[in-house]
Length: 479
Length: 152
Image (cartoon, rainbow over all chains, first blue to last red; front, side, top):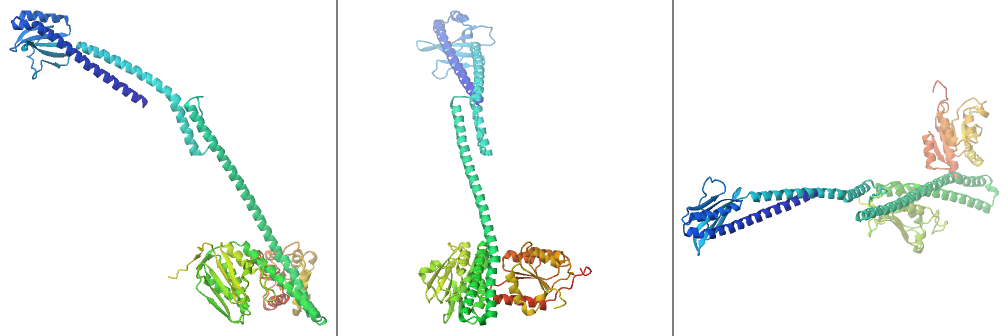
């Protein structure tokens, strides 16, 4: 490419020089002829005036000294040839030249010769014409030599350019192409350990290659740092996961043995106390009987605690498997499940339209059972028990369960959801303090939250939503 | 009670539980027809008339009352051995245990238990439960015919 451009430039320059030379050679030829014609004209004017062709012929014979003049003719004013000179024998006489307008001379270039004509004047009046032919061999020879020199010079400069270009290829193109190849390989293979090599120790290219390598150093360093950090994190996650799995397993085997071993002694306490009452009751006074009763109540309560705790642990371990679930159905099921708890009582159930929820149906049924079981329990002493289930008017993604039972003091509301925390005495309302903790746990596992409002003897309201953003509850398509 | 034959094989390691269960079963007056095995090995020895029980002529009880948490061989392993042997495969097995851990229940049913009952803590409940299961498996239910190779 470079070679092509420089060869073209050389050719152009050579051509221009050649053309310039040709033009200037022709001009000098024309001006020489003009001078010679003028001299001949001046010398032969008297011969013309006095009609002396011999004198004119003598004048023309001087042209013998000019080797390039091949022919010369002096025309009289009448247009007839007056005197002529020919280097070689003529084939034909040239015609009388014609001048344009007021021109005093004219010329025309032929293939091998130039024809030149000039008016001869005496005291401002034309008295004849000098016509000359000059052969162009001289000029052609010169131009040919000139062309030879030009071609030789061009060839030599082309050779020089070739040598220089191959040198620059070695010292510039090759290293840059190498650099580009390394860059492409790095970006393609993401291998930052390769380096560009430099054959030179100094110069701009060496600096460029060094800078490129330094950049690769930095990238490689950062990459290794990132990988190390990632590996470390990965390792830590694995470790934690293993620890978590181990803890989970331990918890599982713990609750398994609790389930098997903790209930047995309680069963024995209650069983043998019952046998004592049955077989030896009549030997005990009222106090003795009462103490035995207390022992049995304690054992049963403890049994309930164990069961509730195990239940909570089981629900806690359970994965949430979400499904589109009609909350109306869950509530209906929960109410019928609780039937034994409110047998013989009059409860006004007010269930308004509930949404379809994206939730674990089994776990959410447990939520409704626990909340409604509480409502049933705490309305036990209420004359006309009303239990409402519906959607909050402020936010339709919030579901509430309201009763008009014993209620609680609002200032202790935050304690409701902690395990074993109770706001009522066991004598008033039995319980283990696990039910609401379980509810809280299930709702939090769904990504939601639960809160409560209450007033002593005016009832309690529990609100929950399955997601803080409220987008977990989806509408039933009633259309 | 028919000619000293064992009607219930009761597999239970806990003395207190054995006593409470026997009290609950008193009304059936079959105390002599209940054989109590204190661990899984003893239970299988008895069932298959081997080891200390090699003198016993082979016969199946009306049902096996099986605790799960036992020394040596667990209740589930006993159940598996019973179901894996042609001679004992048909005998009804009732699991009576403290736990109602899901994994226990699932494993028991997978191994072909006939009934799974959790021992209630409340003694009245306990008594009621044991009486019901005694009534059902001893009186209401038809036990499978005795094993003989020709019927297998």
